[in-house]
Image 1: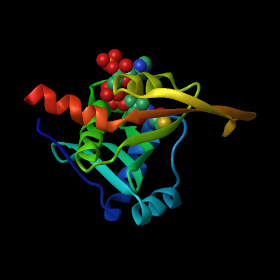
Image 2: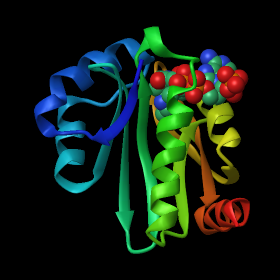
Image 3: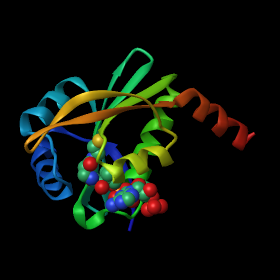
Length: 158
Ligand SMILES: CC(C)(COP(=O)(O)OP(=O)(O)OC[C@H]1O[C@@H](n2cnc3c(N)ncnc32)[C@H](O)[C@@H]1OP(=O)(O)O)[C@@H](O)C(=O)NCCC(=O)NCCS
């Protein structure tokens, strides 16, 4: 089936809320998504007609921040997050954005594995950053240098 990556529209918020409800333990509220539609850049990956993965980035000058990514439970482990994020990062590299940062829960091994595959490396941590049941959890801070990615892509196609 055809996959397409497109801008995620505010009118699709109900589909996003349904998708995220299946995806994992921690998810954005409707207000979080509405804020991101107003201020950030949100993308979807469709398989056929259905939205299977979503991502939100903020972009300031030459720096992007990955704010959220989620894949529908029934579509996980099929390479969809890797495809969505790698295409977004390649597009940002092409626009001259130099780095992409993100924060991730220390315990979120699936997401950390995904980010490492995409070329992110850990540059720090924020102690007790996230709430968890009965306490707080550290965030890891990761960076991906996008200009290096762009140069690699150019040399591959030379
Ligand atoms: C994290 C998440 C987005 C991954 O989406 P996905 O489409 O299933 O990931 P992909 O299929 O593209 O996997 C890419 C790589 O990520 C890693 N990965 C993904 N799911 C994994 C899992 N359950 N366990 C271990 N590694 C995993 C693997 O290295 C995988 O490569 P491989 O399949 O070749 O081994 C998805 O599990 C999700 O929606 N989780 C809940 C929301 C969330 O935690 N978002 C991150 C917030 S920081």
